Image (tube, rainbow, N blue to C red; front, side, top):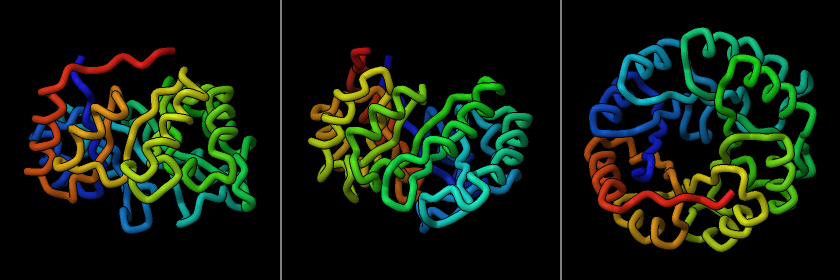
Length: 225
């Protein structure tokens, strides 16, 4: 199986263009300048009109805290997106001290599983106070995938920690993200041997084409689990 290319999109135009350029999966979100917030339903509907699978960000604030309501406010958007037909949801909550917020994550995870959705923990793990402990807890909670740059700004910088976290929790599908570009993706594929990669592609459909072409040229990897 080929390495799957996931592209984060925040507009209907780029969702459609990225899918046309060959993206396997679209992560739909708003405000990429804030690392992604819950998107508008119209953009999600546009993404669902493409051939790509679709996951949706659930995040209503610029930090990784769940807020006073313990992420309860995100349950309604989750149900709305599930009714539209998305394949998965993306979220992740930490406590103020950087430890995993078990209750808030479990609340949304349980709701997502009720709708048979894939559940993805986003780059909140890169802000965790103890990444290896957090990785073990995410596996225990039974998340499906984790997006990470290995605790740093870019996956090239955090490759070593990324591999340690993946070894800690091999039942999870670990997706490298953060600075994945066509000029470094071959190096990352050889170094990390992921089954999926995640990129913004700089919002450029041509960059999506380049990423897809490079990932198609390398046989897919099988993570142990």
